[in-house]
Image 1 (cartoon, rainbow, N blue to C red):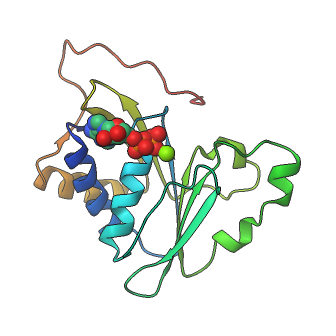
Image 2 (image 1 turned 90 degrees about the horizontal axis):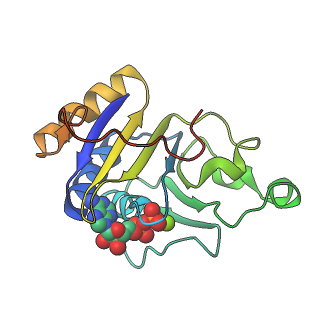
Length: 175
Ligand SMILES: Nc1ncnc2c1ncn2[C@@H]1O[C@H](COP(=O)(O)OP(=O)(O)O)[C@@H](O)[C@H]1O
Ligand SMILES: [Mg+2]
């Protein structure tokens, strides 16, 4: 696990560029965190970094939006907040959004837990102050190491909070 402090929306976007350059298809990345923690901000910036032009809208009502990156790769952005367990999960065309040439991003992954494969990269975002967020990245050792190094080079604080900073509550859905 790598802990980071995203001190502003601009830092979140910079971290998105780091992730965008490390992710290779096929990959599944889930983003967990309460409303307003920056999940859509992050995914939108990843899409931009991978060369998506035009509007990148939040899929909170459409459940899914698909794009093409500059290498022709499929980029899928899912938001399962409004997906109800049961019938919705069974009817959803999961396979359309998971392919050998695809990088798939899922906000609110809990509703799809039974249908989705294990994520390659898992990011938890937590509120810290109105402008800053805490992030916890879970991925392979090589990915975590590369992400931490690139994030630090971008001026992002990597590591646990300073002593004295109050401990954060566990995010919803954490074991
Ligand atoms: N450090 C930060 N990182 C990301 N967003 C931030 C940050 N600080 C403030 N914000 C604001 O929080 C909001 C996040 O919205 P959004 O990305 O839609 O969140 P979510 O998809 O998690 O509900 C935006 O209005 C953004 O400007
Ligand atoms: Mg969102």
